[in-house]
Image 1 (cartoon, rainbow, N blue to C red):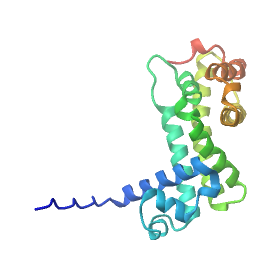
Image 2: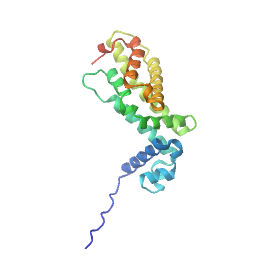
Image 3: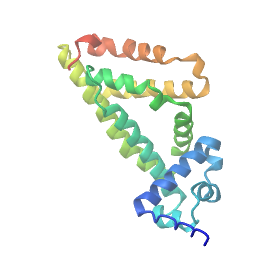
Image 4: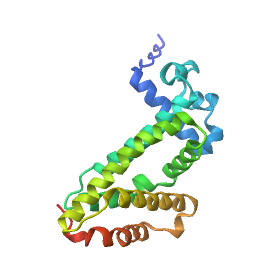
Length: 204
């Protein structure tokens, strides 16, 4: 008797959402916003079209979910403890690491950034997540400055530092050879040292 075909595993709602987010990321990384279509996403995921509406309400909802995932992945890497490093040192190592600065990841970020200005759903999501991102950087800066006996306007410095990191992202995506990990790290410290002092004295 021929072997019976094994039934497909039934995915939970959370797993189906994740599958669609994975597929959307793959499509965006491959072809930017022009490849972020219902047909291409469901083909990538191997699911029916109705699942996008069921889980996200619309393609805008799926795009916002992708943006949330990217931000949460970014914050998770930044918040992961690094043995022997202060919070600010670990944050900078994360911000120049391949995990956050891989070209495929940056291609997704650039696509999402380009959509924020014209997509109100994505813009609202960005405003919420940006606040969390800036707060995490403000905490690291405040700790380091305090450990070195310095006063700092953490909000202003964090805002400027985020602009610096965003610029790194654009450069690393457009022409990675012109900005190495070492150069990005050195630029981070050159910008921050006047505000927080020497990195080696930062809080442990």
